[in-house]
Image 1 (tube, rainbow over the protein chains, first blue to last red):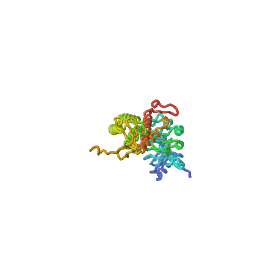
Image 2: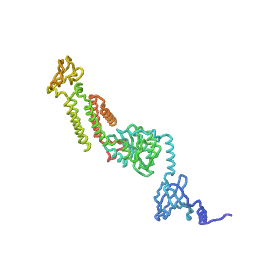
Image 3: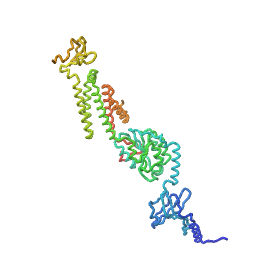
Image 4: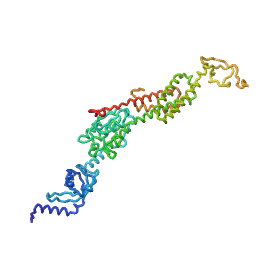
Length: 401
Length: 69
């Protein structure tokens, strides 16, 4: 027999049926928030939805007090509560008692995971593919927004490093960002030695374009190493997986891209000191000074080099800090010493004073045993040489006694 | 050595090599003087490149923001 309900009775009956079903109590539901309204009364009204369906939700003021975040449209959440029927409208709704942020398992995140798997299978993230960054790049390409703080951070960190900096502007969030970033990356082909792709921090939505396939493929196709720096330390995007290097921040990316100028200058100073020291050590160690003169290396050149070195040392001393200056001072006195010794052993001055160098075919004659009577020897004078014959070999002691 | 074309990286590499060879001390004086001069030329070249580092920023499309140009 057919029963005729009033609307009120009907809704009451539906309500009874649903609200008494234990399976519709103390339940968790997962979805995306939309139409979120924070009512003046303190209650929150919103719709929870996924790809195929939606349900009205209400969160009363009392339950909202314990909530540690404020949901907003587009957020993925987990809702804990009971099914109830709003009788005046016959509307089924979820009365929320608690809300939790849903980390990473929303629809978009599932898509993201799928894309990651696909790109990984194609080898875009392969470790073997990562390229070494150049130590001293001549051209640094930057893909970012010309207005952003990220660009300024990078430029400030690069400081006076002597490279051409080529900005390839991109729109880094919002509609069309993916295409913009991808084509800005491609535009740097053949124009840079290393590329920084960066943007500052933002919400997951803001950073989303760096999770797109088209950006991933643009980075993969780059002809030079790419450093990615998207958002903060904790934000890791697909772009970071594909890039040759991932930097936590734009500033860190700039540090990776180029050497520190002060460090290079320091290295140069050290190299100069080492070269000079090595040269003088060679000079002292070799004891080849006479041979050196006879081998037609011009003494003039030697002395002018010594002068140059001293000047360089003076300049260097001014540049170095106190500790190094002291080191330089030691070097300088060694230099003086070497120069003095060079002058002293250089035979010319001595020869000018009336001394002579005697030598035979076997070399310098330093003692009587070096020659035999009758042997032909050579005397080198202050000016010119003499060919002589030895008449007698007599030892010093006899004369002394 | 073409001074105009040699890059910072290349220059620093050769400088490092020269320092090492010189410190080994196995060559004649003539050779070590040559190396010394070569080394000093490289130092000068590198310093020059570092000093002349006017920030040269270019923009591929559009114009640079006024605070950067």
